[in-house]
Image (cartoon, rainbow, N blue to C red; front, side, top):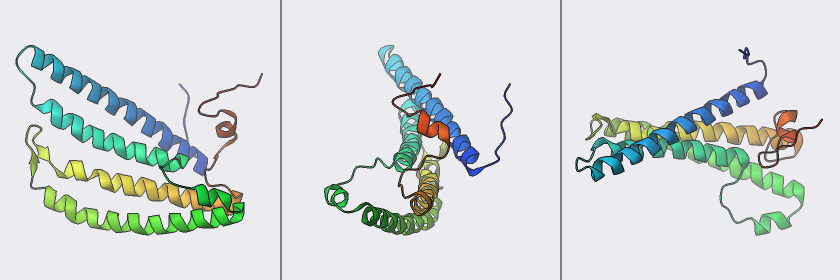
Length: 183
């Protein structure tokens, strides 16, 4: 078994990415099983009541991971025709300004999530018997992960003049869509 240790920021980012991938796969499989079970139990005439809320709750948490991935890869939907027509340095300044504003907005959301989660803690998800705050608590993770990525992108713009960062050489060599190993 390979021993894993975190020695650099790149190692921490890779550990976070691996953990996110694992959690996403587990959540997806639970959702898939839940929906399959819901269809199966309806077919046999005794529908399971817990499957709908379980799927909804886990789908929200998967959405959080998806938002984080979109921020990491800088692939959120946006209209950037004017931005792309500007010189590279101006583009980078605008990207940093947008990230700073978004960090402020996400920090505001994070702060106000406390009151939302507190209000929802007394309302149970009927079939699961857990607090509705578990549904809204996903905002904590979403804002924290997204702010982390935006700060990393700002640092990358300042250091490397790029928005999307490549933390280690393997990230540059093994592109997500085109994996090529050199002999």
